[in-house]
Length: 117
Image (cartoon, rainbow, N blue to C red; front, side, top):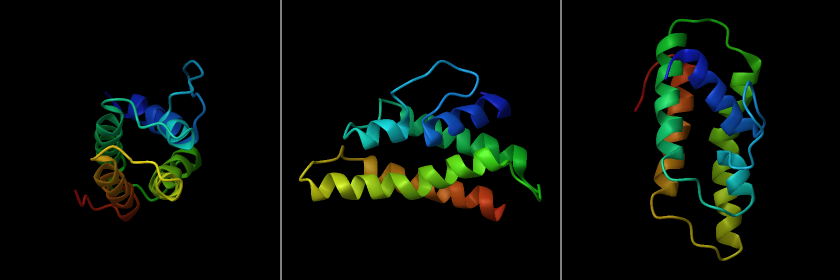
C-alpha cells in the first residue's frame, strides 16, 4: 500500500464515504454504527495504513482536512460506538477494544509527529 491508497483507505474507513472507490456499507465506522464487528483484517489494515501515513507525513506542518477528520472519527467515534454496544448488552469481539486503542495511539502519533506504537 502506498501513501495515497493508505490515505484514501483511512478516509473511507473513518468517514464512511467513498473517495475514488465504489460506495461501501462495510467501512469500519459504518459496521460499528450498525452494531456489526469489523470485517476480518479491517483493523489490521487500518493500523498498517496509519503507519504508512505517519511515515509519509513525518515532519509536515500541515495535514489534509479530510484525512484529519477521518482520523479523528476513527479515534474518537469508534470507542463511543463500542460503549453504545456495551450499554445495549452486546458483546464485542475479544480484540476490538485493543484494536481501537492501537488505532487511537496511531492517530495520536500522526498528530504528534512521533510514532508511539
